[in-house]
Length: 128
Image (cartoon, rainbow, N blue to C red; front, side, top):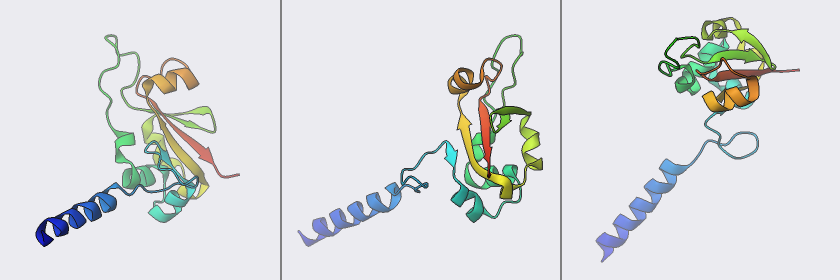
């Protein structure tokens, strides 16, 4: 009986340890958001470095988005709500100027920023 009790305690401990989310400033984890605290703690020098260290999936290839290849399969970068460029532009944005970085999936990007963003959008909000 002690062996079974020990296994249950071990499993419960593992579940808590593995399931603990990283909180953002509101206390809830959001896999599509990188907060200012996370940016500062990352030690990245540019938006690209921060994303690569914390949420590398933001930079991933999304696959062909149309038969005519009229839209990039990579996310488009927006800064403070304005189109800023292709994903490579992230290397030019200093991390110290960034408040948040959010990934919008294709359907969210189309709703928020309009058509032509089938690879999604990486939206950066700057510190004011």
